[in-house]
Image (cartoon, rainbow, N blue to C red):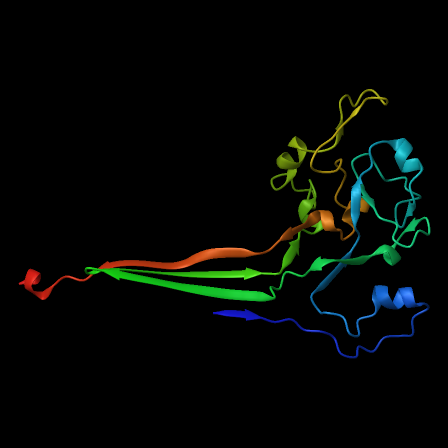
Length: 212
């Protein structure tokens, strides 16, 4: 069996928009309800020189809290400022559009076998910034050591001119600090499709004569 479904907003009452771009960016009427909005990541900032020439980001103290290794977002409207106006559809939500199941059964000379597979597709999930933080509310027993092992960091913290070493995660800060890495983005999105074996059975039917 297989089913596919998705829903769309009909008319969603909202205030008047200032421009066609604002309507495209924030309007819900006629939009699929499982559309995820966020920033498109172009890469990582490699140096402070690159950060100094980057577009200004909202809530970053004039880019003052951006470090090498932080996400570099696309300035969609080319206004030199990274804010909500640069958000775009970046994928689907975690609710799957496609659900399916598959039953298999075989029998041969008294042996019988059956299996049931279940799956879903056309969905994506994102890990919130709180769950990606090295220190979650001061905790060190969760992400801390895995984050430390693969993070952007200086080769020598005692040397201000030390080279930055690249890693999977941005440089560590307190989870409550301002950071561009907290914005919803497509770098922290993952495919949610799956196929799992839900049930399996193997049996044998004995002949009556053999049980006497």
